[in-house]
Amino acid sequence: MSTARRRTATRLADGRELIYFDDSPEFLSGEREHRLDDPRPLADRFSPVPDADGVPQPFTGPQMRRDPLTGDWIPLASHRMNRTFLPAADSCPLCPARPDAEYADGEIPDTHYDVAVFENRFPSLMRVPGQDADGQGVAAPADTVPDDPRDLLEVAAPAAGRCEVICFSSDHRTSVVDLPVSRIRTIVDAWADRTTALGAEAGIQQVFCFENRGRDIGVTLPHPHGQIYGYPYLTPRTERLLDQARVYRERTGGNLLRDILHAEQASGERVVLRSEHWTAYVPYAARWPVEVHLAPHRDVGTIPELTDSERDDLAVIYRELLRRADAFFVESDGTPIELPYIAAWHQMPSSRAGRTTTDDGAPLARLHLELFSILRAPGKLKYLAGSESGMGAWISDTTPERIAARFHQLGPVDLSASPASATTANGAHA
Image 1 (cartoon, rainbow, N blue to C red):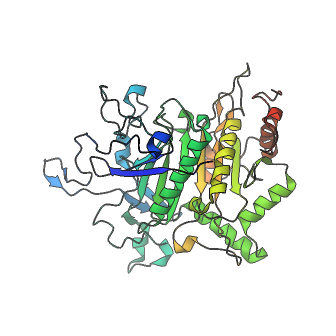
Image 2 (image 1 turned 90 degrees about the horizontal axis):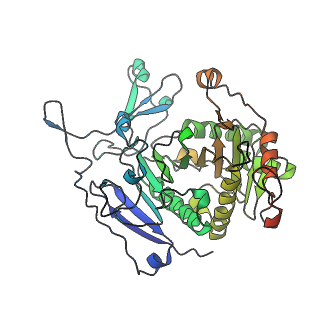
Image 3 (image 1 turned 45 degrees about the vertical axis):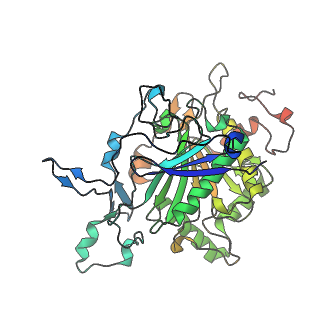
């Protein structure tokens, strides 16, 4: 697979960064160039904002507050209430520009692109010049004790991170699963590029690449896209994973995520896909009605660390995983149901606290993807009701073995197996 990619960076009218990632021959050869100027009459995003009396006031970014009961940081992003919500196809801000169209507030100034990344216009995390003086992110609550201990009850800080949007295609009606493998490979390179860039920014402690897909998940823009967050703190999920991995290391000397992968590979019961460099499996204690983890065979902490061969292989197995996920549920007539899902990349944090390893140098926060869905049956969603939402005590409506068994009906586990052995959506042989 060709690894030739072209990266072109520019700025939107309000100062936000926009980057094109291209693999099409016309862009690689230079036959076609991207439009780099943004014709919209947008003010600089950090411009003073008039108050109720019309007096300009300095722009202030989002704040985050620490929950004293859990220690979690909660960004307060009330401005996101005004973000674009399920627009008509001809008013989509992620579509390429159409010079003669009535709608003229799109984020991509060119008429075509392969993959594009830009800073979110409605970010929940944003660094504002002068409002994050130390640029070091935030410390754990226990690291600092104020003169008045009661001040620990109300701790706040600028939500000085970064939120980016990644558009997977200029085609409004497509989906990642429908893209050619070469385009998914470009997406992987874009994830790697942004992980490196955001992880190098002062104060960013963790980079999270993810996709929300489907209206049932809560997607507000149906155009195929994902997001990339640079958090100024370690997320609760990552902190808990690291805590468990440290305990496991102390008790066994092993690497928790690596040993889980090896145990799943040895058993094989819950392995649903396997390639040269990757294995996909349903975790032993899966929470969601559909849940699969995808992990590299080599000890890798972040997407940028993947070799070209591992990235090539990832593009193939990831698309096949999404294809089978879209066939997991079917209508009464056998028609596959497009699965609403979240695809979440867990990477080693960029902060020193998160870069813990085992004695052999393997990261405790080992790279892996978690793909899951709230759809538990055709027309039925898994709601996080009293036990899950109130107590954080999860109750599953199925078993991991049943999830894996359904995936086994959809095709061979080994991707090197003949495509002729693959099965159709309802489990019958093609």
